[in-house]
Image (tube, rainbow, N blue to C red; front, side):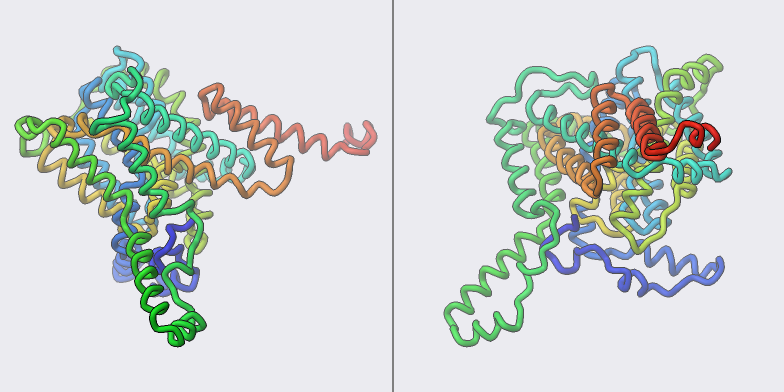
Length: 473
């Protein structure tokens, strides 16, 4: 699954990870060395490209909340930018920071669910996750949930992203109302042809995610053959250099830049709507009614999603993609909790880590904490320089391009479920996935998956045992 075709962009080996000096205790010097090591780019172009990996989910949700519910975009950019920089420094991998999707969906579907309700839901969700982390209960949850159920949730989330991406590409979207309008035209600056061209470009550059060591490296035997045949040698070297250049292009970054350029081509007057300077930041006043409403309509449906996808699934996926690094559900739960206990008081969107964002950034080449730190710095600068006026630009961004980027993030996340080696595990995973997708609830899929898993284990355990033995045990 590694970002292919460039030797410096491959997944790090454990030996490479040990190049940083080991830490002894908690000395200031050791902490500084660890942070520097975590923020060092593994490959500048690859990490720059990887930083674009989760924009397919971040932009639509944040933009919709900004336009439909008057979310403070400037404040959200500033806080999420700071979160990106800190998580990059802590974890040393492209750990994403994404909006909480269940709370966002509730706000977009219910006009009476305003900013105070959104922030109350985020604070309460963050508080519960923080307590689960510091008390060690999250670690217990992680140990009790079987891998096949986690894979089922990951597969469901990945397929959900992919289906949403296809909808973005096929249909014209009204993001503020989260509605699909008519079919997308073939031609135009946000047409199907543009989306297909972007998709083909990313496939050609990135491939299917397999490692490829041969296209850019020439073996000694090939060199010997080339010495014997001068004309063939020159031709092969040219083709090899061309392939190396093409396969090392930052595809997602170039596609995103194309989208920004098309914003001003489609509507040159958008320049007049830009106002420089940060948005005003103030503490959100949350009434007792908002606390109650936020908990019932926001926190309760969001908590299972956050525990399963933002903490458990992210921890498992991180360990799969970066086996040389250590991750714990305790630290992930605490960081998600702190992000919301701090930022939501000032009107920043409730945030969490996300398996889909991590998979998307990894797919496009992100390998270090510097990847998300770079994205965080960009968010911070945009929030301070443009503030909420940036929403005028994002509102004109070609949605078809966002759909293409989201499609690859969803596929990369879904591909992580391919390690189920037994029919029984695959059965549980697919049951969990089907219920999650059809019921539109990760919590429901998790519950059904756990029940099926326990029933199968009981069936195996009771095989060929007399009833009296089973009763006594």
